[in-house]
Length: 418
Image (cartoon, rainbow, N blue to C red; front, side, top):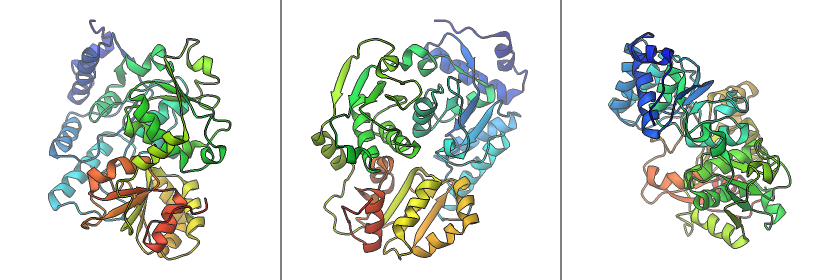
C-alpha cells in the first residue's frame, strides 16, 4: 500500500521546518511504509523512552536533531534517563558513559521535551484524553495509556518516539485503528478468591500470567467486582507488557472501552476463554522468583513502574520508623520526590534505610552494588522479569509488606500483613 503524505507533510520532509524536523518526518514516513500504513495522523502528545543511554549512537542521534534545529511539535514527556539528576542516589557508570548519558539527557531537554524523567508520566499529570492519538514509548506507559485512558498509541520504540514528537505525526496503523482494539480473548478471574484479588500482590502475578497467555493479543479481564485503583492497574499492565508484548488490555466494568464484555468484544464472539485457576496463580507467582530458596537477601527494590505518592504513604506505614537491615531502593519520579521533601517524609524514610532513586531506576542503570550471588526482593512484576538479566541479582517476589519485613530482618519473610 502506497503511503499518502499531505502537502504539509511533504513540505516538512523537504525541510520547511529545518533539517532536524525533515529527518524526523522521513523516519516516521519510512516506518509507516514498512508497517503498511496508508497515511500519517496528527498526534496530541508523546512520551519519549529514547533518552536512556544504551551507547554513544543514541546520544549522537539526539544531538544531530538538535543541530538540525528540531523542536517537538507536541507535548513530550521524558521517560527515565541513566542518571539521577536529583542527587538522591548514585550510580556506577564509568566517566565516559556518565558524560554521554548526561549529554543525551541535555539534548532531549533542548529539543523541548519536559524533564519528567519518569516511566509513569500519567502520575505526573500527562493524561491523554479518551480517543486521542498519541505516540508513547515505554511498555508500561503504553499499556496504561491505551488501557486506562482509552487513548490510542502503538509501542513506539527508541528514536521513533522522538521522531513522531518532532514531526507531530505517527503512522496510522495498529492500535490507532478502532477495529484493532477489539478484545478477542476473555481472561476470566471470577473463580479466584476475592481476598486475593483485593490484595496488592495479586496484580503483578495476574499481569505476568496474562502477558504469557496473551502474547500481543488484546484480551479482557472478566470477574473483577470493584475498580482496583490505578496503582493496581499500573502493576498489572507493567507485568503483562514485560512477560508478553501486551499493548492494550480491557477490564470489564473498569476500563473505558469495556463498560461490559459485549462492548469490548465489539459484539462478536471471543476467540478463546481462559479460566484462571488457583494453580495457575501459584505457578505464575513461582515464576516471578529465580532465587526462591535463598535464606538471605541483599537488597529490596520497589517502584517499577515508579512509586506513586499513595504507595510511598503505604511504605512509610509499613516501615513504621524501624531501621532496615538491608537497603530498600524506592524508585520514583521527581514529581513525587518534591512532595516527599515538602512533607518531611523523605528524611524519615532515608533515616530508616530507604534509598530513594529518582529520574531513573535500579534495573536500567548500575546503582545496585556488585555482590556475588546477590538476591533482590521486589513487589514489581517488571523488576522480577528484568532484574536477573540486567543486574545479575537473583529475585524473590513478594508483596510490599513482605518486602518491608524482609528488609527489616535481612531474610525472606512471607505472610506479612498487608
